[in-house]
Length: 166
Image (cartoon, rainbow, N blue to C red; front, side, top):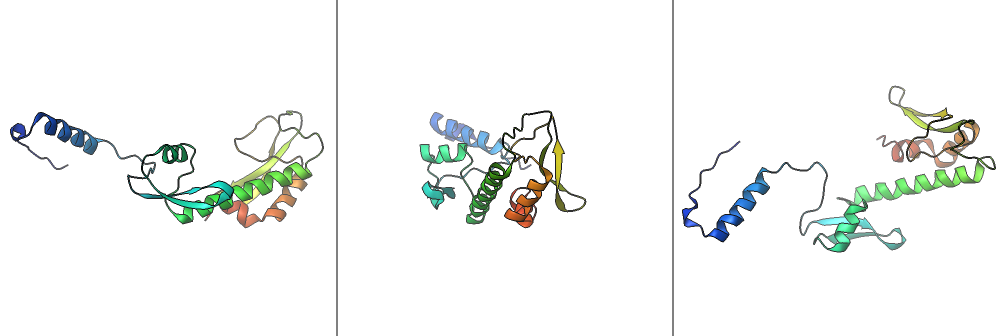
C-alpha cells in the first residue's frame, strides 16, 4: 500500500475535516455489490415493462429503484432480467393452469415436482419432495405436468433464465 505523508499545518480546520473524510473514504473496503455512482447511467424497468435509462442523482426514485433490485448496469443485464421474469410467469401460469385441482404445495402428504439443474450432467431434470419447499420454486402436481412445462417454455430458456446457465 502506498504511504503518503502530509503537512496539515497549511490547511484550515474545514479543509482538514474534508481531507479526513476523503482519507476515510479511500480506506473503506470497496463493495462487491454494484451501485451507480453520481451521474452514472443505469437502467430500470418502468411502467409497462419499458426499459428506461436514468442518470444516478441519488434521488428518491434512484434509491427506491436500487432498493427493490430494479437498477441495472447495462441494457444487456436488464434485457436478461426482463426475459427471466417472462419465463417465470410462463412457468407459473402453466403450473396454475395444468396442476391438479386443489393442488397445494404445503401438503406434506403429496409430492411436489420442480426443476433442478445437474452441474455434472449439464441439464435440467425434474425432482420431487413431499415435505420440503425451496424458495422461489415453481411446483407441479406431477412429473408429467412438469415435463410438459419444459416443452411449453423451452429447456434452453429454463436453463438460461432460471438457472443462469450460459
